[in-house]
Image (cartoon, rainbow, N blue to C red; front, side):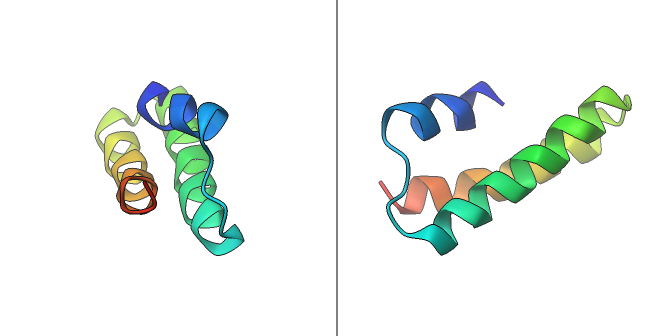
Length: 56
């Protein structure tokens, strides 16, 4: 989650669609993590990292 949170705070994507493609899986990943579903959480968080890295 920190790999997503830090860039979102310091240099968020300027395109709203890209921002949504990062924030939605990030929120899903956090919920899955809290539910103890760590494998599914990592997958969801990975989906958010792709658009974030591509926007850099």
